Length: 116
Image 1 (cartoon, rainbow, N blue to C red):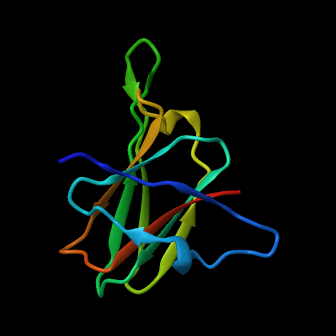
Image 2: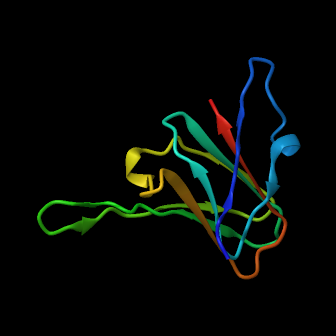
């Protein structure tokens, strides 16, 4: 299966409720969203165990082609994190940012992409 694409929601001066715009995370194949310099990722871990979210970096640097470390975000059970914006190093060849999930058997994970 392919990654599930996420559409961005624009923040307003009046604010938004992330619970109104989030969607169930694609825990097996991951999610993706179109990269933009001002884009944020919201992840709610509704599970009863910690969740690790990984944002892969597909780039290398220098003559030795050293890999740039992936960004990892640990979210305790029942909590949420707002992460980003993500730099160009997270941009995949197709212009998207990939989002991967790992946990014991995560359930109840909700995700949204927000334009700041």
